[in-house]
Image 1 (spheres, rainbow, N blue to C red):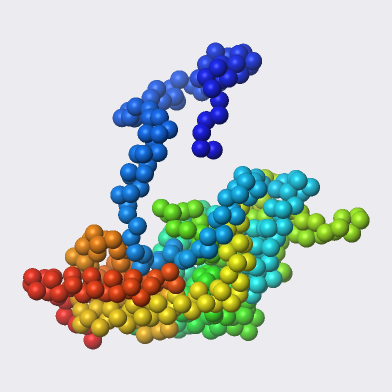
Image 2: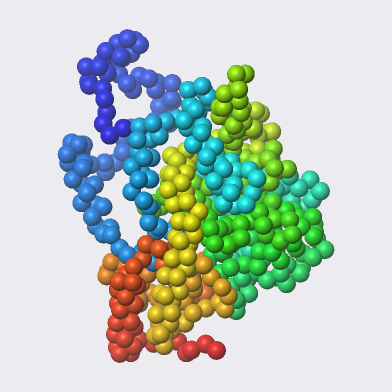
Length: 466
């Protein structure tokens, strides 16, 4: 809430009613050695007016830069109606719908979300969401280990072309659960994971294979071949798709001969704005045969004794409801507010609108990269189809370009060298449907001017690679 509702007199009255003198007395069971006497360097208290002004001043320093940065978080246009509805009290202050008789509206909304997400992924079942894409993938890995009982190795193959933060999160969550994570290299020429990269595991026990689509480089993977490879060896196929891309590409449920078994990823592109790193929400879909191993909660539709339609929580195999050791997940919440935004976003855009968003994003990225590679010091990498991100290689040191571009109110892209040393001086650029031709002109003009200035000043240029 935006204010503290209790006056000092009311606080004193409540303390008197419970028989204590100070609020600190409520915490007297905490040993003195564990208590922190104060926080050093804390500035004096400010009034509401002063705090508001301070926050506005601080946020204004960030500016409102043109975003050509993707790498897992995308600047899409969000219809104004989405968050106008999301922030209504019925949704904004709603809580976990444990009491079905008092929560039919929220339960129906989650049910609609599950239906839309299952349809988008071409799967039979969707849960009510998880924290974010990275933790959703970790939950999918745990789910695959539980579900694939024929596999004894507890071995998961993770392509290096998968988002590096997602790989790190999966490793953190499952590392103490006797699960082996094996990273599979990508082709340095194409940027995708060819089936041949899996040859070393041809005759090995593999529990599951993770398949991103598109991958972190924006490159489209050969999902049919990878899915069929997994199934031919008794492994499950875990899809990690971008939901916007699925409006144009075949969904995970249609990959290969039998379709992927699980689909997990990040829902931020569906109506959630970029906001200093979050919050996000993770989606997870699966086949009906695996539904009892699905983490999180599920909303089901039923009828009462009088035949009236109703909605209720079902299949909640979480630690809040059963023994921790038997729970399918120790994550005990779902991102209800962001799911509300995603549901409204998908309902307002519709299938055709989402296809247009995806097509426009691809077209803008193609236009941007075609313009940028007109400069002799900028080169397109990876000879594969892409969605709305692409890797560019620069002859000039990136650090000499990124800071000046940021000073011109531009977020030019994601430097890949920090996660992939072999891709030093490579930049991952993205242009969604929110970027206009004028935005692209602004980026191209400023980058070319900087390159000209650097080369004229004698900045060392790397020799052109074959």
